[in-house]
Image 1 (tube, one colour):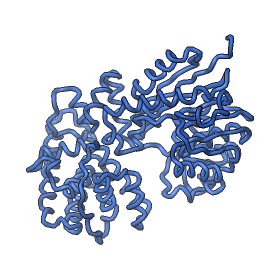
Image 2 (cartoon, rainbow, N blue to C red; image 1 turned 45 degrees about the horizontal axis):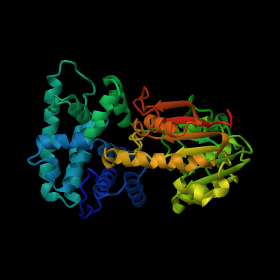
Image 3 (cartoon, rainbow, N blue to C red; image 1 turned 90 degrees about the vertical axis):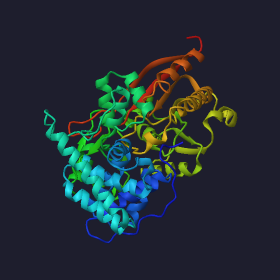
Length: 474
């Protein structure tokens, strides 16, 4: 069960005061997520209902995603300064206070007075006029406590960390989880897997804004040409060292569909770490390739680009609706070698016996806990539970067992996840090798999220293992 309680309550009335619409959007997103919606879908829906400028869209996004990520820390401030604990606050007030607190604690460019006054105005105009004094008093109490703690802190940190002024538990797990707003089980696991400094780096990256990375369609453009096209519309970009076709945007352009080359299929959105998987698969023109968990198609289309659209690529996924996105992406990118099949990949050998032993390359980009993408998916840390990992591991093993009969002798199988959990990664690969001695492990790598110098996240966390099936008699 999600740590967000599922509440049913009316949304606030539309706010008409200038300067508030972006904050109103963020508030509505938090309300929707509390009721069970996914953060990205809720944000897209609310942004589509509003006519916000580019800067206001960016502010709404930052406030919504930031407040969702920092839920545990913001609740701790409510617990410390409210008359009742956060979970007992009227839900609409609780999430409105999160919007205000996030501005006070995490956005230095917004004056504290503006953070307080806009929150109070939202309360008054969004149906919480009776509680507006409560919001005002609590935010000002937090502000005073922060100022007192900063004055008494000899290190004179600028800016002060968002937990400064909160009483921290002596238990290192509790303290670590609270400071970085991570669930207790994940905080404990990280400190068990990593040295303290690397756990801190992981946590900081997970609370950073994700990069906006693109993959250039090598069949239709190149990085230099695309960078020049972006520069012509005042969008700065930079080539990524980790991947030959990667480009990251240094400016946030708003609606990506309006950027040069989108309609012509010159590029796709794909995280830099995800772009590193297909090169390890090493698909070649003329080969037969299976992408066993394909939707929405980022790696299927990358495979086709690497193969110069020459060969037979099967994109398999259980969701027929999600497979339609694969087809749409392939069409925009001008790729014709991808075929789709809606099926359970664990049962492909029985569903398609003609495929047994026929694939030169198989990619299993497995469903996983997504712990490497917490920066990108703001609410994921609250949806995932420790006990869910075991069921995911069972599914991952079933997928590997299910597709292995389809791999040709001498063929290559790549297993990838966007998580950092050893049970889903190295331990699963070790189990698979033990079960299937005809497989040799070529390499395996764990990429951890990290931070760039500007504080942004430097890519998602991914795991990849490259396995090859020995030729008979080898």
